Length: 225
Image (cartoon, rainbow, N blue to C red; front, side):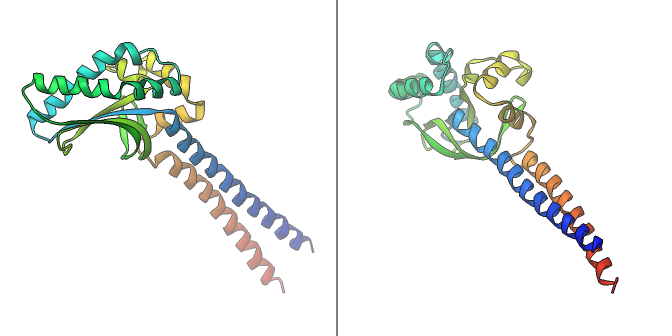
């Protein structure tokens, strides 16, 4: 009878571990998804991967950042940033077109704001996992070349990131819009799965140990007759 009670107690603990693990991992993925809605990315996509087109891409980037700095540099909220973006899409396109013509090219330019799928990307010392993000996309010509990107909100594009995330201003900007959990997730992740997988493996490890112990108790119960 005592053995039955022990097995029943352990089985209940095992079930609680499973439920706790589900909620724990659910919270991790919830944090992972939530910060995507708090950021706006900025992408400039080159016409091609030729050295000339790649250099042109960087010139267009510099022109946009320099001319739009006064509008985006001190933005304090996501809604404010969205409004400025929507009000200035034509202006951003004009800046890009002007720079392209200045450099002797006749490429078309498309500037759009929306949600787009992106692969995992690192920026300074933090990593944004793959997934859908709000973004301003500047596509030059055929848009078949490598892209340059940064974070438009918070306005990291307008902050010197030469020294990476150790820059106090960058930390301040990120912590101003993200929770502590969200901030730590993108600072500590080396790829889009590392942090969630480490946590998941730990939960699975605990469950496996509990399952083995329960199995041994059941075997012991069976040999007791």
